[in-house]
Length: 136
Image 1 (cartoon, rainbow, N blue to C red):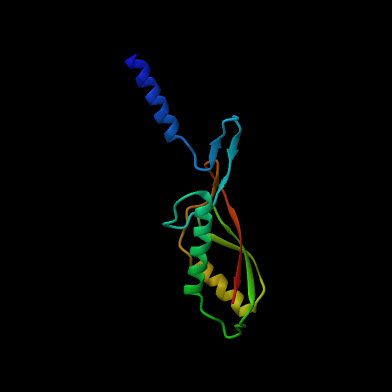
Image 2: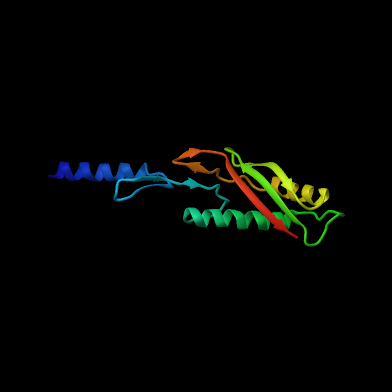
């Protein structure tokens, strides 16, 4: 009996240690694999909370670190298409809207962000696409 109890506890411990964030199994035995977004340093919680925290912290970072351009226009909207790569660093793919000076200022602020924990699917690290709107 003691050996059986030890075996069950060992099995439960190993399966708990090997669990992946974003991978769940429902009672109907359907495996659900969700994309875990990149995680900003200090962000915790559920997948939705981490995603919200990342966007909030990134927006705050851009506002604090942006040097306003001389051709700044109030009310301008800039949309940034970017990727957080497998190393946790930003890669800007496209910037639309605003003036060229404003686009450069937003791009420079994003590129100065700290390294983040990259996103993953089922434990496999992957590039994560982000589309960020900024209204000035």
